Structures are given as C-alpha cells and as structure tokens.
Length: 323
Image 1 (cartoon, rainbow, N blue to C red):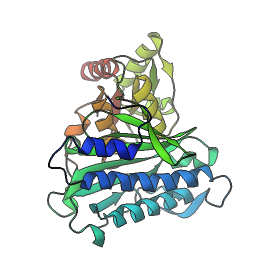
Image 2: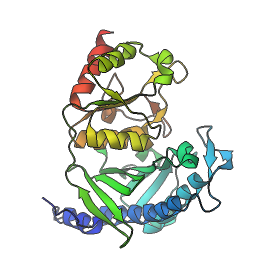
Image 3: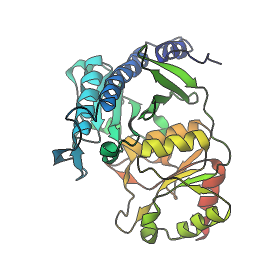
Image 4: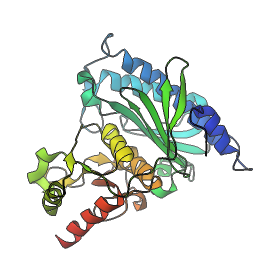
C-alpha cells in the first residue's frame, strides 16, 4: 500500500521499480502529461478573468464549435507531449489526423486524448477535464491507434473542479491524486479506488429518452427509479464518470435515433474510461459488447457507452438482451 500524500512523480517511479526491465519511457511520458495538465489547470482557474472564454470561431472534425479554452488546452497538450520525445504519434479529438512529432521518431508509445472534455460547460463554471489513452507503438503508422482498449498500457483523466484531480491506471488498479496548488504537486488522495458492487445513482441525459435505442432502456431507468436510485447528470463526461467511479452506480450515453452509433468517441472517451472503470472493479459495455474488446476502424469512431458498478451493468444487459 502506498502512503497517502505521496506525490505523483514518486508514485510513478515506485511503480516503475516493479519492472526490472523498465526503461523509464512510460514514466517520462506520464510526467509530460502531468506537466501539461498543470498548465491547463492554471488557465482553467483564470478562465473568468482573461479572454479565453467563449468560442474560437471555428469547428472541429466533429462539427462542433471550438471553445477558446479548448484550443489552448489542445495546443498545450501537443506542445508538452511532443517535446517529451516519448510519443511516436498523438491523436487529438480536436484534430482531423494524428501528429507525428520529430522528437518522438524513436518513441515507444502513441497517445490519444481529449484535451478538454465537457467544454460546452466552460462558460458556466462546471467541472471539465482532460482524458488520455496510451498504447504501445506497433506498426509505426496511424494504425497504431486502432488497437483494442484492453491493450492500453495506461489511461487516465484530470478533472478541473473544486479541486484538480488526476486519476490514473497503468493496469494495476486505479489511484487518484489531488493537486496541492501551494506546492504545485499532485498528492495521492484516493488510493486503490474500487467501485461499490452496487450504487445509488444513475447518470443519463433523460431529455433524449424518446430517442433512445434500444427502447428497453426506458424500462431499465424506470426500474432504477422504483428501486430508489437518484438521478445525477452534469453533462461533462469526466465529471459524471468521476462521480460514478467514486460512488458507484451507472453512467450512460446510449445510441439514439439521431446518433445511431452513439455520440461518445471510442479512442478519446469511451476506451480510457472503460479501462479505468474495469480496473476499479466495474464493467463497461456498448450494450452489445465489452468496450475494451472493440477494435477501432477509425480514430474518430463513436460508440454507445454504459459503464459503472457490476450490479447496474448486469441488470442493464438483462433488459437489453430481453427487451
């Protein structure tokens, strides 16, 4: 057991010592992410005081309006991850195609990231975050991003809320680190996070209920209500999944008549969150298959997402399969 209050860098180095053949490359990669998100966090805290709120006047590959802070976060991630020399390629939700930094031509890893999840909530001061997923370099081209989620070597997110928290897994459980701004360090605050077997909260956007596919989801939600569950939905995936990770229950963004394949992106959102939830003892599915078993066909592929405690996901699957 690691000591509460241990800083993230020490934790990463301690994990590295478990592997005699480790080169330190993954440790340096994670430190580069840490450095980038610290800078992003400082800008988020100042968002209401400087001219970085609002729209940037352009749209991303998804056809969504880019927020000013979105663009800043994306540029910071690219800058820090590229200069680290630890990533052969970078794929951002904000960019059409992957980037292959000159500094990383001999690197071992590729990284996919959502620089600022929940950015539509920026202007109203709701929690937002950064999500990342790391795979090994295999083919030395863009197909390296088209690997199943269970092959991730690390995944995590940072939530910029009442405090800034870095949640990470390298395949040995999930740990959370809270930023102490007085010393500028992420300190271990949530050790070996485990989802409860059963929660009390469901997190769906019920305004889309008439459009959900399959419609058996409506009966599932009604059953949760009858069982005394509470509805909590923020509209920022990082914030909603973070609450689910800590308190249990179920988070979902199903397919609907408008988004036949779901709305959340496999590489940048669904797969890394599924990795974390599974590492913490939960389950993650599209309703038809385990999210971590999906082999992507496109870097911007979308999927339906259901993740959370085992009881809720197993119950959901029974509704879908018998619906």
